[in-house]
Image (cartoon, rainbow, N blue to C red; front, side, top):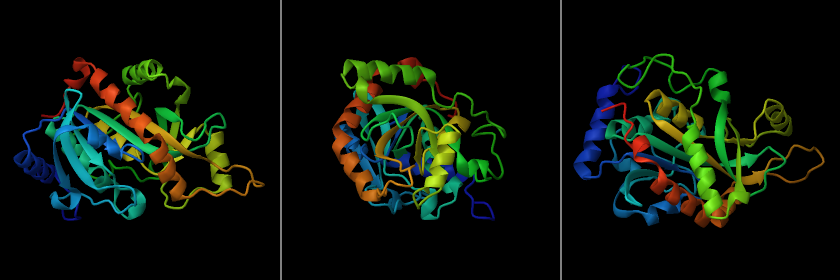
Length: 295
């Protein structure tokens, strides 16, 4: 561990070796379960589950609706590791700590990261319950100088100045559209730009109007840090948002967003989202799954 408390490469290795000592699973796909996807672990076979607090160096989730467990298992024939709940910037964690699990996944052999979230719909064409495939992101904390890659860079993970162009894999985005069509839920699928804000307060009307102006379709409080670190580590990334509420951008509108509606929409769309991701994992080509960078 560095003098400022940051983890160094050997600390990540320690966590990786601890997990390897607990399970024989060798995951190639990592899944970060946002609201509505936590139940995906019930579809896994031959599972090994461990609470975050029992894993060396791991951050612990404090948010209602996030179970806080790492789950290894088989999903439609592929070995996966699922984060059943994530941690957020607003919980007080530094971004390097929030993204620590992604680097551990990379060391475990994960090549493809699926990251999901609950988000507010800024785009007026989006409906509550829609799924938005993330095409690109606007990382507001990063633009303000808070990036998970700030600090010493270890080339064993990735380069000092990684490009964020093409972070969200085009081939995987095409695949999910085809699957949604086959499952007859293509009417629920959108594709757009995700914007991350720090939270935990929901955005003001003026802030939402600004985000709408700069091109954001959905807004949430996660995902960008994990996607950035995954890209840094050479992973392919697929991101998807569940639209849990329509953002209020009219001063005459008396509605107010709240966490309860986020959880409720997650429950209502859980089955569709879990089924979609389950089939998606099954159909990810082996050529993608075996595209490794970190050994």
